[in-house]
Amino acid sequence: MLDKVDMPKDRLYIGGEWRKGQGAEITSVFPADRSHNATVSGASAADVEEAIARAQDAADAASWKRLKPHERASFLYKISDGISRNIDRISYIQTRDTGKTLGETRALAASAAGTFRYFAAVCETEEEKITPARGDYITLSRWEPLGVVAAITPWNSPIASDAQKLAPALAAGNAVILKPASWSPLVSLELARIIDEAGLPKGLLSVLPGSGSVVGDLLVTHPAVGKVSFTGGTAVGRSLARKAAEKLMPVSLELGGKSPTIVFEDADIDQTIAGILFGIFSSSGQSCIAGSRLYVQRSIYKPFLEKLIARTKALRVGHPFESSTQVAPLIHEDHRNSVERFIAQARRDRGTILAGGQRPAGGDYNEGVYLEPTIIGDVAPGAEICREEVFGPVLTVFPFDDEDTLIRDANDNEYGLACGIWTRDVVKALRIGAAIKAGTVWINTYKQFSISTPFGGMKASGMGREKGRDGLRAYMQQKSYYIDTSGALHPWAGL
Ligand code: NAP
Image 1 (spheres, protein in one colour):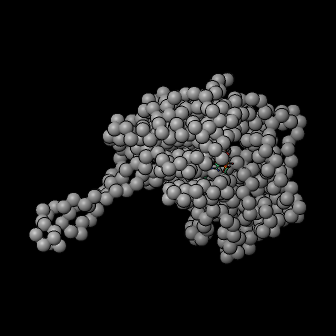
Image 2 (cartoon, helix red, strand yellow):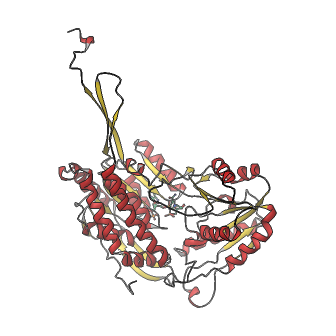
Image 3 (tube, helix red, strand yellow):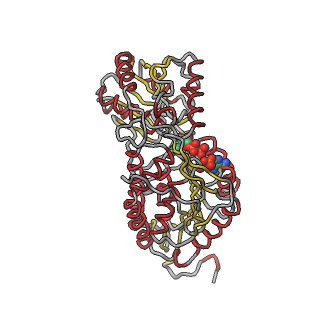
């Protein structure tokens, strides 16, 4: 690990050139002590226009268009190597930018390297199809890039969500404009530096930190942008989808979650508790897939909860650079205020705070944006804390009696991102998994990820899937060819 790394300078990556943005300033602050990381001049509307024009030229350039898949893939392999070489820098910058533990940001950087490598391999091994002919012709189904695509990402795991969009979009032959979240602009600029160093032709990538309402909105509404791949909150995702519908543009939406975790009486209790703690409190709960609603079979509810509460209170809340830290600070003061508002409302809704609920006090805690891991019981399923995404270290707990009411309650939420099931009975786990409306079901595990397995949400958690081989096709459009093999004149013409 490096002791200290220079933060990215006040330069944006616009059409392959490094220069100052013309938009409002963005300040990145270290959540552990609120010290200043960097101030970046964000992109203006004019900067976005320029990036789009450069992207169009780059996407249309014969030198890029004519590359064979294995030649495009070679850029992605180089980017992957560049990320791997720079893991210390990337993780340091991302920890400063987001307050995540170094262990976590190292894992995210490694996963980003794996993502570029995976999509390089998909790109050079993907096959096009000859479809069954129904006449004297050969039919081909071929895939083409969309042209210019935009990627809009949130602050909670920037390097990983950036890679999940840039790698397939570039592998598919597009040019990409990335807009990272305003609370975490730095690691995306570092990624741009690495991609530039890997020799990607200029103009194919721009990285434009800037406000959602200026940069994000223009990327969505601009006629030259052929797709937006968005990861973020459901409210912004919905408004973006409405604007995309106006210009009939495809969007993929990876949105919020309020995922149920279900514990049956026959589960391995220690394995389950470890998985539940990790599922809700790692990343300080700032995770779309956080298992934030816990349903425990009534026969074991009381002893299970006692153990869970004791383990939760023993979690080490601390500085993100300390290797022993399990729960690091939240990203920003405004976000902690938002999480605390949910806790206060839960108290008013007669919830019992079973663990946490406070800011840890004293010493370094006073300087940082810390919050204790929190468990809340005794709230009615209709209460706000049970329905809304908190995006913080807050777990609500409920007992359940039978499968039918469990499935009804677990599905009684607008989100459908993920679900955890803990039981030794695999048949029961598969039965429950089939009944839960969620894009990912974890059985006796939680928050496991693989780039080769599709990911995405049902209901208000999103539209479309990322990752997996089909992740490449999400950035392409299909074209069909009919090639005559008969040489015959068409009888209709009567010639
Ligand atoms: P957010 O407020 O929706 O912002 C996401 C991105 O959209 C940011 O870059 C933001 O820019 C931009 N944006 C804001 N307004 C926009 C507009 N009008 N047009 C276009 N873009 C706009 O979400 P967040 O607070 O950053 O992230 C937390 C949310 O992301 C949670 O709901 C979480 O569940 C979700 N998430 C989902 C997944 C998934 O895979 N399903 C993964 C991670 C996170 P600014 O920062 O400048 O406002």
